[in-house]
Image (cartoon, rainbow, N blue to C red; front, side, top):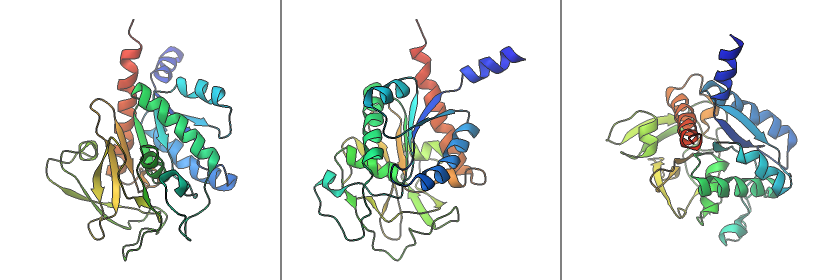
Length: 254
C-alpha cells in the first residue's frame, strides 16, 4: 500500500502558485487556501512560491514545477507598466507579487508550461504580454460582488480553449460566474485572444493563448471559490492539472 501511495504522489504534477499578496499577509493567507484545495482536488500538487525570494532561489523552486497558477490579489498592476496615468481608483501596486509573476511567466513561456490566471492573474498576464487594462470598470453590471455567489453571465467564444475545457460545443454558450474585480483587460496582449465577455457591457472575462501546443488560459472570475459546487469551475481546474500532467510526460522520456 505504501508503494502505491508513493507512486500516486510522484505522478501528481507540481503546480507553482505565488503567494497572492506581498502587501497584505492576512489577505494572502486567507485567499490562498481555496487555490490549494482546488488544485489538490483536481489531482495536482500545489507548490507555494514565497514572495521576495532571491531570483535564483525562486528559479530553483519553479524549475521543479510543471505549470503555473497566477491567483487573485487585492492590489492593482502598476499602470506605468502599460504606459497609462494612474486612475484615482487604482489601488497600490504589489512589486513583490509582480516580480514573482514575471519570473513565473517567463519560465512558463520559455518551456511551454501550462498557465492558468485568475482575476489579478489575468491582468498580470495581459500586461506582461504588452496589453493594457481598464483601471476602473464603469458598468451597471455587478463586477465587484465578491464571494462565490453568481454575479452575472459570460458568453464563451465557440471553438476556444475555454469552451473545450468546460465541455461546451462549437456554438457560443453562456455560463454563470462569480465576480470580484474592478479592472479588466483593455488592449489584449501579444499572443492572446478574448475567449469570453460579459454580454451586457462587453467587459473581457477570459483570455487564452494563441500559440499551438501551449495551454494558456485566464479568467476574471474566481473558480477556486465554487469548484466544489460548480461543474464548470471543477472542469477548469481538472483541465489545467491534466495539461500539467501532459507537459510532464515528454520530459520524463530518455
